[in-house]
Image (cartoon, rainbow, N blue to C red; front, side, top):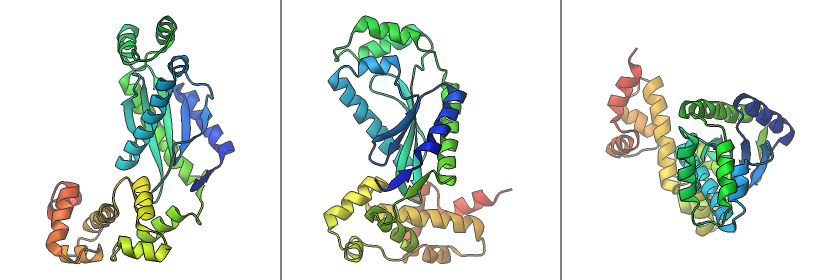
Length: 281
């Protein structure tokens, strides 16, 4: 683990979330291992589904894939799991480094119990599960509306911010991924290369690729470009006195035209258009 969670304070926060939403909430570390949850017991539907070993393995894969999706987009990700239940995940970040995940679920988000049961029955057909017991468990689940899930997801994101703000989680500064992220965050406007990082941290390229891909969900060059464009957006908004060439230079782009091309590809509009849109009253 690259971080440590204050599980005592965290458990109290999870209880508060449950009191407000009546939805189970779970905390995972950066490697998708469950650290704590409230309530501890999963829903009866999930208990029955996980009696099948293949279904249980699918649950784990589903959670991991959803965590990675949330980390890639840097915001909560709501989805239906492989068995037809709805979940939402909020990634936890320290700087650019994902250090864990908050997940709530598994909720029965259908208009009627009959509709939900037909969908879950279809998705769980390959598994060896007691169908009658599963059906009974589905019909006992409360129906959760889509707008309620949206509101609960907003609260989940607020909990994620509060968790980091109140120092309920801390980084192990000696860990290699943390040191690499710290260096990139402080030097992304300078030339940053795989070879240079490998030499600086005395590691092989394979190990560096593994760390970068696992923590950023992308390659080194793409991550650095993303950081540079983020800084460019800040300068275009807060420093109208700068020319585009000056913005490009301050963000680490030696080629002015390349900066415009990359900015448009990532943001969707040219820098001038973005700057004008952000300065409108």
